[in-house]
Image (cartoon, rainbow, N blue to C red; front, top):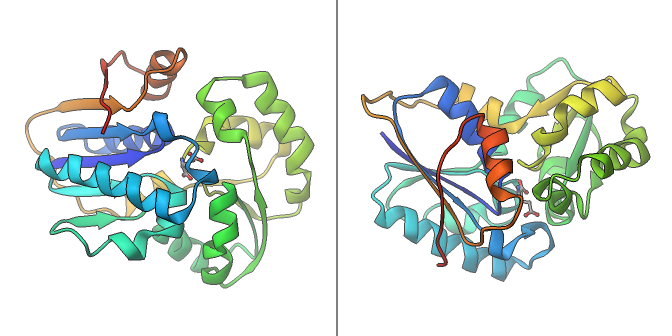
Amino acid sequence: MKIGLFDSGVGGLFVLKEMLDIFPNNEYIYFGDTKNLPYGEKSKDELKEYSSKIIKFLFEKKVDIIIIACGTISTNIYNDIKNNYDIKIYDIVSPTIKYINSSKYKKIGIIGTKKTIESNFFENNIEKETISLACPNLVQLIENKEDDKIKEYIKENFKIFKNVDSLILGCTHYPYMEENINKLLKIDTVNMGKVLINNLKVSNSKKFKLDLYFSKITPSLKKNVNDILKNNYKIKEKVL
Ligand code: DGL
């Protein structure tokens, strides 16, 4: 099977990593729109413009399915784009919402980009008590691997979650700091990529192939990609 995934940057690689672990023998094409990052600060029209270019690119590469490995696109414009193409497009948030609604958790924390939290998508669909926080700047810190600043950010801003039963990492970049959140705050976290993969029906084919495209190659990108995927893959620059 040929699977396309996309995000604004390296965040969707955490979803890809889960897929590679469970379905290693497939063809994958990943697009990270680093030139237009951060998506969490963009208008809906801009998000529609970026995602339609990427979907067209993946479609022309003849993928069988597309996974929107981005919380911001999934919560803001999924309904506008999901039926525009003759191909199955999966969003990243709805499996997590289903999982949370059927879980034993009572009080749910949500962190996401400004645009995701403003959409109220999680709050409107989760049938539990919720507390949410928009995290501006965090995506850039993760893209640039500014680990000390990320730890400070967690300590300073995430205290409000100390009584939640579970914290949803509502942006696909956030598994980058999952270990630190668990360690520093001692709370359970939900990684949307893991939940999606557990609910996805994908057949393994015989051949493995991975193409990684980014719209802008930044200084820390190569190391970030290798660290997340725990392998040394080639990255290509592609402006759409
Ligand atoms: N990783 C994306 C998300 O899940 C986009 C983050 C951004 O570019 O602001 O929301």
